[in-house]
View 1 (cartoon, rainbow, N blue to C red):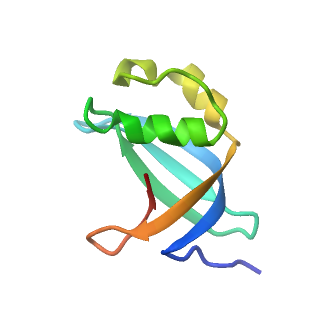
View 2: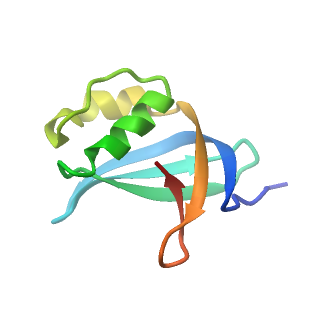
Length: 102
């Protein structure tokens, strides 16, 4: 039975899929899932201003790669993150969509 991911709660999420997108907005699309089978997609923008959010995700999952610029988010870093688990606080964004906080 699948338990829904709820906003305002901490969830143990597994980094199921990571895709680096360069479609005018450089970002990493991360698909998380839970042991119960629920899933969540979140976007981590790779701008100089927002890179710290992706770095925080990597460090929370136990990956100690240095991520200080968008160029450092390469295939090696994405492969190191794949399958790792991370505790994440889930919130609703301004559109009502679920995303991770931090």
